[in-house]
Image 1: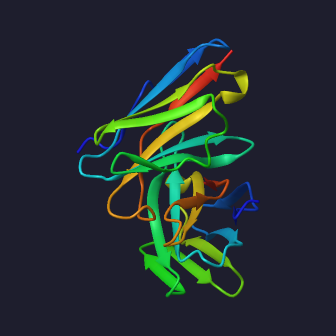
Image 2: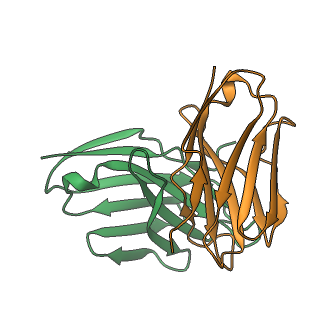
Length: 112
Length: 114
């Protein structure tokens, strides 16, 4: 049972346009959500997070939206840049279990 | 700080051999995680430690896998005997204070079992 799903394995966008990466979860106990970015031959690095008490968190070009009723979150990148090309992982955790559960990742390609 | 350090970066071994992966977490971090990344299963948590004590090893695939954390600055993941299906990238990560906090990952060990 995969509790965190990223249904789009890949996404391709033009430089300057918006990139929207989606993530769905099934466990209603999840109360903290994170996005990580991963370049080839490197480990994932933290990008942005959101607590379940919020519905939006913004950091520069990156915004994460949380829809608790739909158990859905999304990462918006505006404007997209070629350097944003990477694999993006969605992660979710709950206070009781402690550990984070990761999605399979979405490979973003930003074309110049 | 140098970040989370994993060794070796690449490991090629033959089926049946013992493999040991090593991790040095960030100094002061009290949580350490071992993950495996494959095309089929994505990034899956194998085991995590808090203050050197294993807390959850439900992700360890089978008894061939074992992990230890003898002190706060060192952990190992051992596979004995190794099998071709163990081929994957293994990541170590650490964090401080709470297991759900931001995790800092090492660069990973790419394991190939022939």
